[in-house]
Length: 245
Image (cartoon, rainbow, N blue to C red; front, side, top):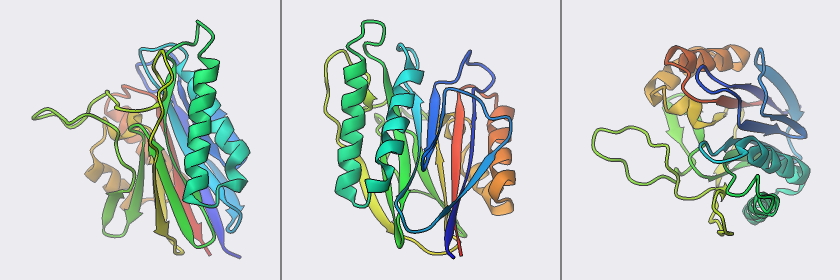
């Protein structure tokens, strides 16, 4: 029987006091906490399976609340996300939920990015709002399939902490334009879904080298380790999706 494995890990890094990232894989969520070791889950291929990360916006209140709201909403809606339009509608509902919770003065302006994929029987729906990423780990190298919502980089800069859209994040409601695309699916395909706590400190070619050498839990561990060895400046959350047969 064809199946999907999801190997996930979430860690606060070395400099942040707490983890504002959250993650969803099917009905399973991991919110604002830490996994001691990579966790691997196995799902049958067929029913829509949502796998996503959400990164609470730093420097604003309650990023962990916003990210948890987003992934829990996606977990609840996951089995119904069988089209690109359904994914867009779900992300708009996530945005609504963050703003609704933000009516509490202590939560006002909280926000989060989100990025992930819905695995269908024969294709993959890739989505994001913000700068968390989805990368296709092909035999020829990593290929980013999400779209960074970031302003243009100044000369000599490889990264920026600024985002041009997110779920929530402003005092008054702001609509979003989610990025959603469909890709074909084959046995052996691997996709990396991660927050910028991994991609900011670790260059893409270094991530690719690790994914060429390792798979499953070892790959997740080595990716996390690379971010820690680069200083672990931010929360690190990742999910490695592998299509088996």
